[in-house]
Every structure is written in structure tokens, then in C-alpha cells.
Amino acid sequence: MRYIKLRDLRVSRIGLGAMGMSHGYSGSGSDDAESIRTVHRAVELGVTLIDTAEIYGPYTNEELVGRALKGRRDQVVLATKFGLVSHAGAGAGNLDSGPDNIRTAVEGSLQRLGTDHIDLYYQHRVDPNTPIEETAGAVAELITEGKVRGFGLSEAGPDTIRRAHAVQPVTAVQSEYSLWTRGIEERVLPVLRELNIGLVPFSPLGRGFLTGTVRSTDQLDASDFRRGNPRFSGENFQRNLRIADEVQAVATEVGATPAQVALAWLLAQGEDIAPIPGTKRVSRVEENSAADGITLTSEQLAKLSTLPPAAGDTHTEAQAQMLER
Image (cartoon, rainbow, N blue to C red):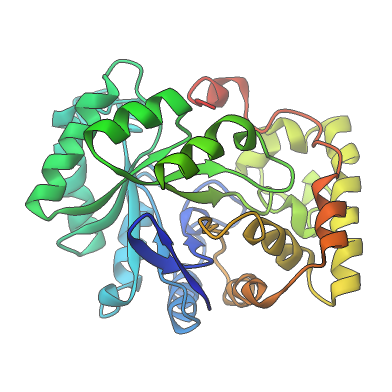
């Protein structure tokens, strides 16, 4: 496994997103033992960037990651997120990045994760009711106290990134980025490179679609959030299967899996990018991690880069209202 720097934070080129172990996807929360084995295997393979959030569950994913990292904490760069749980009474799913809420959130995350510090602490979504300068200042205080090592933003736009960075240097921005979600390339990515901020793409496999294994929504549990996602619905789903088939065609040429090709394309976009494909299975973390060793030709990269845009929005209307791009 190769390693890069997100600003001054050294991480594995490919990380591990833990959300699906407890939240959102088919089978979430059904096999904690396998999820813990997956974290252990990831660490064995050299994966150091482990990503979770207090909203996942809520809380249960941080607890799971904390159990999995017991005795292994010093081998990983641990990332979690605040701001999608209001601890003042509104509860889970409500934006609150006020300083008091951040204070409450970090203490809970530290306890659940079984650690005395968080390596990368993200604002999960921009809170329009709290100036970003106040949020950044609150995290800066936590950094001074040693409870947090680096400050991150998730799905923030250029103006917010600049304003936050002026108060507390931003280590990384997390945003959805993959072969079928490329909206950050025009406005966000240039700002990150100007300010020497790393990029952590989530859903780098298109929420599993680019793996080619999801051929029908009948494969998804009723509780799976993808059933309500526009790209997995109706005609959009059928049109997007063509993109998955094109990725499969390149994978056949390379002698790799579609997931590995999708990740290899993402890694080829720059040395400041560390995607966090999510999984709850040992076999998948082994497959994803091996993508670091795959090199695509210029022709293959060009073919993938010119695939047609995915049909349908990447979020529901309610989810999209929380995004800045």
C-alpha cells in the first residue's frame, strides 16, 4: 500500500469507510463480527484511514469501530464527523455546528471510539445557521487541547472552504467523487489544490453501482437507502447499467475487477486523493485495497473519463439541500 499526505496528515492511498457496517445499506448491522474482521484485515493490509461518524446509527458505528480498533488505535488515522446530530434537543438528522454542540459531540465520539484524540474531525454538512468561522474556531480550540489533530469539511463549497481555512487550516475535504459523480472537478478541486487541502472521496464506487454487482433493485433490502436514490430508480437505473458495463469492459482488459478499475481511475486523478470505499466484508476490503497496485493506460483512462454522465441526481431533493458544491 502506498501512502500520501492530506496536507500534513500521512494516510494510506486507499482508506476504509465504515458507515455501511451499521447504517444505510442492505445487511447493515447484521454481522458485527465480520465487520470487525474487516477492519482488522484492512489494518493488516496497510489501510490506515478509517472513517466513521456519530450520525451513523446514530452512534452504533463509532462504537463498532472503537471495538474493532481496541489494541490497534496507534496503527490508524481515525476520522469521524460532527454536525448532523443536534445535542440540544433537535436530535439526529438536524444540522448543528455551533461551538457548544461540537463540544458535546467530540466528548461522545471520543468515548465511543475508545480514544483520547481524533485524527481528522469533519463538519459533516455545512450549517447555514452557524458562521463557518465559529465552527472552525471551535475545532481549533479542540486541536489546541489535543482532542483533535486535523480539521475537515464534508461537501463544502469553495467560499466555505476558504473562510474556514482562514481561521483553522483545513486538512481535508470529503466529498462524493467517482466516475459517475464528478461535480467537484470544476469549482472545488482547484480550490483544494490552491490551498494544499487533501481530498477524501466517499462513495468512490458509486454506492456499489460501479462494481457491476447490482443489476436490479430487487437485490436491495427494503431498508436500503439506495432504493430511494434517483440513480437507482426506474429508467435511470437501466441507463446507468451501461456505465457499469463500460467499466467492466476495461476491467476485462486489465485483468481486474470493476471496483478496482473505478478506484484506479480515481487514484490517477492526483496524488492528493485518498478514497474511502466502504464495505463490511473481508473479501471486499482485500479487493479494494489491491486497486492501489493497478495502473491504467492513458487510453483506458481517457475511455473512462469520457463516459456519459450518470442519469439522475446523486441525492434526493432533501439530501441535496445540505450540499455545497
